[in-house]
Amino acid sequence: MKASTDSKNLSAEQIVTALEIETRLKHVFMHITNHEIRSPISSIVNITKLLTENISKLPYEKELKQNSIPSSSVPKTPLQKSLPQTDQTANEDLIKGLELIHTSGHRILEIFNTLLEFITTTSFYEDLKLTAFELEHVAHKIATTTHHFIKNSPLNLTITKNYLNEEHKKPTIINDERLLTQTLTYTMIYICSLFKAGDVHLTIVAQEEQIVFEIIGKSKAPSEIPHRPCPSHAPIRNYSYTNNTSNQSHSPNFSLLTQNIAKMHGHVRLAKETESLELTVTIPKILTFPQKI
Image (cartoon, rainbow, N blue to C red; front, side, top):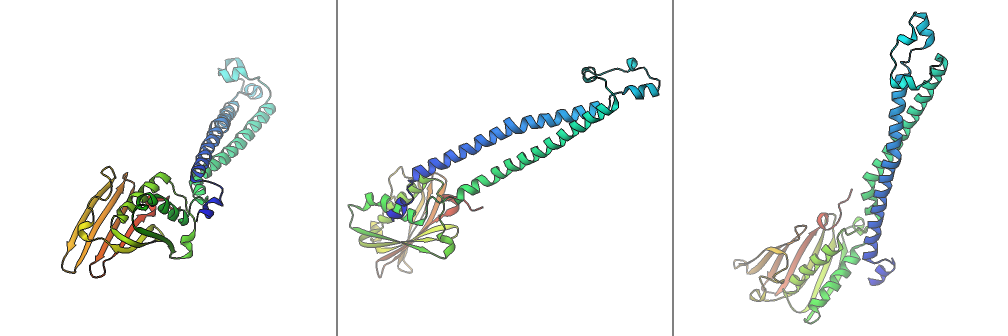
């Protein structure tokens, strides 16, 4: 498991740093493209449009003579005063040149607009396609985070992975490594508080929208199960314990809320006859992991 992680030659911290750098470079590129390239071209396009409209309205000397209108009597705009009064052919060539600049500039703007839109809408999707973490990493994280809590306990924890189909074997990026670690830690503290000495088997099931922990082991007596398994500062809410005497089973139900982001819901079934415990914990992927696009 560790060898699989080391083969990538990248730690989780390095991968996150690389993603941050990539995102920052994308923002720099978009800023330069928008302000240093697109804005000047947009100004040129607007200026050429104004020039084309104004020059096309310039009074030509030939037209003024044909209509017996003295050119001195026609008021001139500042733009007209700054332009030389040439013949109609020269003005037409100037108009054509300005129209060509305007058309070309407009097409270049369309290219940049399309490029910026493509980068904006696909950058997050491209980040998700990067291989950063997979289910083996989650299993390894559970083992390492729980070792501290069970090293002095008589529990023997084994972890296996289960995929419902080939689609779920695809690696996915964990968007918050710290949050995942904290979530798994508090979950495993709770789980370890439920079992007696002996073997505890944890199966991680990767599903489409969630990760499910299935744990089987020898349970403590209901009176030994703490109502507050985590330290007082741990963000656990809505923990309840019920004793159903009608079917001789005890069902502690709980819901964990970690920083109002990662939610987990679990149901514990204690079979009094066998003293075995089956625990299912569900972590929604859409909260712990980025959503698919």
